Length: 94
Image (cartoon, helix red, strand yellow):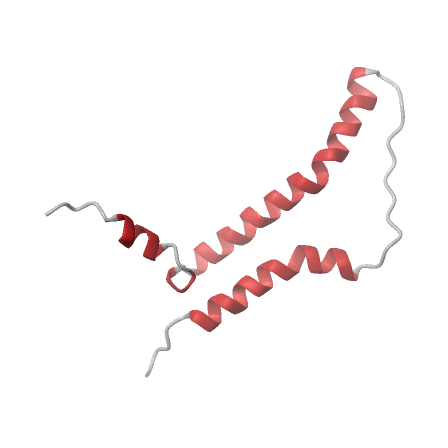
């Protein structure tokens, strides 16, 4: 019998209830890294074009909205994932 896990066993380990706390935290870090790349990527490109290639120009950033939307974008998905993780964990009877 082979000691390597089957595809089904490997897929089962990736389901949310089987995640450890470290897996949950790692998913948050991955989300925040992707969010930073998506949101800061265009700004970084603008700085590169304005200062590195042309060696002149100005780049400005302004935001006139409230704090609710950025807070929900930053914290909402990780908190929702944590709630789902807690809700799907197996119950332990003592």
